[in-house]
Length: 431
Image (cartoon, rainbow, N blue to C red; front, side, top):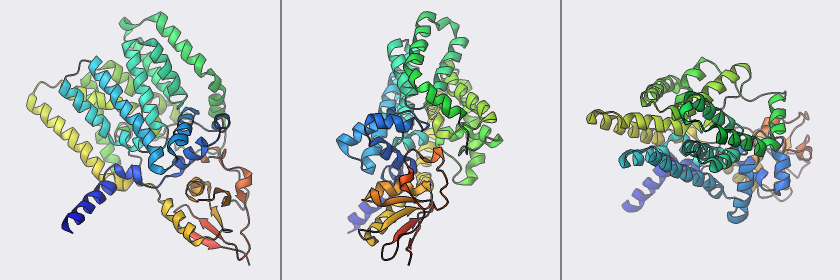
């Protein structure tokens, strides 16, 4: 009995106080959106993503992944984890090319694998782990002058998420600052090839950039500027609220380590996208922490490289130990505070109470996709939209067609289970 309780305690700790929580918790809206958008045929996916911010590559991959392995929560998240493991392999090749020692290489791989930002999205069914992988691979092939592989990874990155363009701009700045390594002919051919292969999606990007309407992205402020590097390292986005000042200190520490490293490639990789996004966001908000996930591997490289260059062995060991303890402790402390809304329990409860003619209504688009994913009969899931307000494009309007709108409740004895944004629900019917 004591052994059983001990084993249960270990399991409970791992499942609730480590990043494994991210793997097993309820899907949130964007993840459920990924599943629903990836189910149709490929041509339909292209049509649907044309009105979404993200290009279709990740949805294509997820489409075939679900065809083979199904669409269970853990299954679809494991795709992102595979991308994360491939990222670690690319970092290994990068470290070898930079002639890092074996100890430094293994430490780099460990801290990259456990990095709070990267491990969070390694267990999320979205495209951000794939983006981090392709951006890092693009930088590696750019550095090693493998131009064919560079073009392929860069094009795939752009077809994953448009912010990949900032990686290409960072590479351009690096070339301007390091003209001794410029191979003008091959660089020109590579950039032209990237532009050509991504050109079919450029009209969609231009349309989205000029599209008017309500925005969900908040304007930046001074706090954003002073905490952005800490946020990109930890994945912090405001919960709990009292971490902002600590993120300022962490951001400052990252800046110090980065400049002491003196690795121009990684400095431009980290700094150029961040600076450009902040400058653009001053005029039109575009900054979203996860869109810049490709900066995070560069930050880890810079910190580890800086520590490895310290000549005082005692100081070096102390910093290596402190850096690892910080990452480990953050990964134990932060996951319970970073939980997604648990709509799975709500839907399972509704499933037990509902009969075969009852309906499920989402009060707003924010819970519609989870309800559609978890409720067994998707044809009985609707958006309650009494005022017939157009669904904003950023809320997944391409998957919430007007056929899914309802403005009245069913007549008794049929019932509607109306789900609120906080995962509570009420049972309603008309007499």
